[in-house]
Image (cartoon, rainbow, N blue to C red):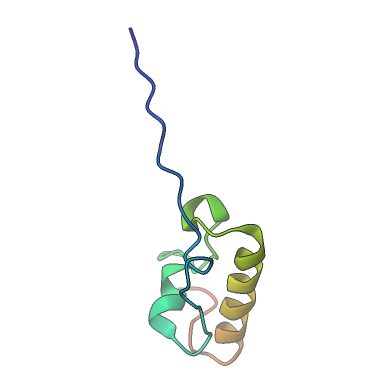
Length: 72
């Protein structure tokens, strides 16, 4: 008989107290894909909807001032 395992629910890091700032490139790189530079979805980052919108805005700001490339 097949057993079903439930994955542990990811907790939003920003709700837990961490912050994302467009000037901190190391943190921004955690939220973009490595090969094409796309913003990772919520199901992968574990962020809540409100903070995912915030992350997207910070990534776009970092791209605009050339801290993070648009594509690789």
